[in-house]
Image (spheres, rainbow, N blue to C red):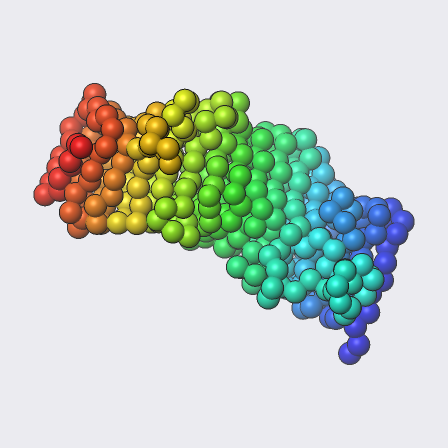
Amino acid sequence: SGRGAVTCAVATTVNGTLTVYDNQALIISGVNLTMNGAVINLNNSGILANDGAANTLVLNRATGTTINGTGWLPDITVAVNSVGNKIDGARGLVTNFLGGDYSFGGVGGNADFDPTAAQANGSLTFGAGTASLEVVFGAGALNGTNIFNIFTADAGNTLTVSSNMTSAGNMAHVAGTIAIGSGFTWNYRGLAPAVTGGAQILGPGTLAFRVGPTIFSSVASTVTIAAPVVINLGAAATTFTVDPAAAGHLILSNDFTVTQGTVVLGDNVTGRNLTLTGKNFTMTANSSFAAHDGAGAYILGTLILNASTANAPLIWSHTGTPTLGNVTISNDVTLGGTGAGLIIYRTFTHNGGTLNFSDRNITID
């Protein structure tokens, strides 16, 4: 019934089953713990911990390891040529769960991680080759967070999200696929997501940006996100910026909803376009696209509505009176919703398709 911790300070490979019992912890200290076995059991409150982000649990079994139970995990590396891995029920990834004294309890630098007061701060890293992991997370830490940063490295990397997941940090999604399962949401609370052109984010589940100001970087070339996307930030004036310093534009090929926040497409020197090719685009009274920056200089990027053949007409619904900067319509669009009308403060271009106003208005001011 008591609590105890064991420290692993020598590089260790586990070839069988690893079990951490209730109220017990195994601490990875100064080394990596490599898992070649098929199963890790975290019995209820069992904790697999580390004493630093560089000291990771390495999933290395060729056909994958399943991690069962509702305890906590450290930073994880998915090794090259390890596929079929699964986290099934753990609450999340945490760096240095037991503090500096390697034991339960303590204060200051020795204090344990408190999931009611701190966000999950452990990260996930994929090796530069074929590597896969499926996550089914349980209840997370503060703000529901389960994980901090996510790093991909290769076209053979696959992260499958089969539960709701909240990340507190950022993604550096260099290559490969992040697939969000049906009915689930990846709640993204980081401020600097970076996706390299060619890397995939797939649905049918939803990618939801929850805090800001956020700067989204399309690294190297234009990025396409195929999952439904929601922007729902802390306030109507909180910004989601498509980074003018990054090389690419952004394409959203599924439904797009701006519930709360201001979308900024580049800056007054370098415009970054946002192209919508999906079926539904929804704005609320608390959403907008910036026409100018805080100094009054015009934002040069353009919102382009260009539904794919399969999705046309794009249904552009709104409530209230959202405002926008540059807008181009390049394929069929039908206005909808219950709003009083849309206001465009910069250029409006209609170069393709039919614009069906229904009973909505567009004011070009």
